[in-house]
Length: 157
Ligand code: 4NP
Image 1: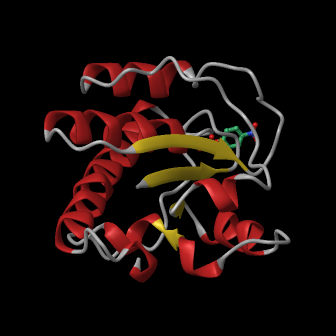
Image 2: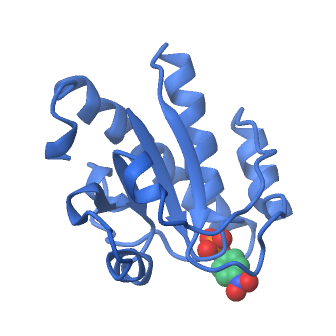
């Protein structure tokens, strides 16, 4: 089973999603391939934004991943592709060869909040990164709960 988190720059939201799901999966002894990518390429090769690193590291996550752009092979390699907002979702769905069944909004896995989107915190403050991390912790738990209930039905995600 494999999960790819996608946002715009791959330096704020999706690396936090990646780090938090990896932390949770490791804590539960679940073997998952986890990665993240951006729909844009402006930050390719960079570490996450310092605020994302700080918030993730404070929550026990490894935050030394490097940004990259989404590529065609992702749609074959990852069972579940998790978009942070509607723009990311639409951009992913436009890719030739994208499998719409694999692409979902992160909020579909957040069972405790009515918010549809994980908002871009780039122009915000540290409190916006904390709020994003709170959302993505619920998303990580929701993904693991879904997999636990449907271990052999990844196509139903
Ligand atoms: P992310 O945040 O999509 O959560 O990584 C952003 C990071 C950088 C930019 C936009 C969003 N940017 O325009 O450079």
